[in-house]
Image (cartoon, rainbow, N blue to C red; front, side, top):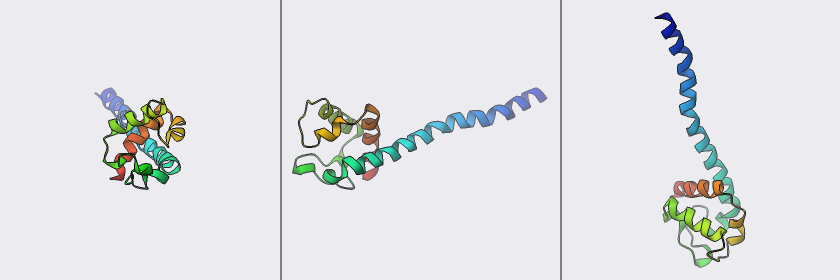
Length: 107
């Protein structure tokens, strides 16, 4: 019985850390996305994603993450020409994912 209690008392902190770790990395991704957004997107889309870039894009803070991700990927691939395409060329797939989630926080 003492072995079980000892085992549980040593495993619980480890298990707690493992389950808490994904939340920490998700937060870090949003922090990185905020930096990318402010540096590469806010000038045209607005600080809160409230402006149609160059008067032509949709208001991005009203889009779903999947729509944002698809639009960024398509522009990066050159399938949709736009004024912001050079900035989108520099985005990694992780950046695209992070931005699509971060923009949801701008509402």
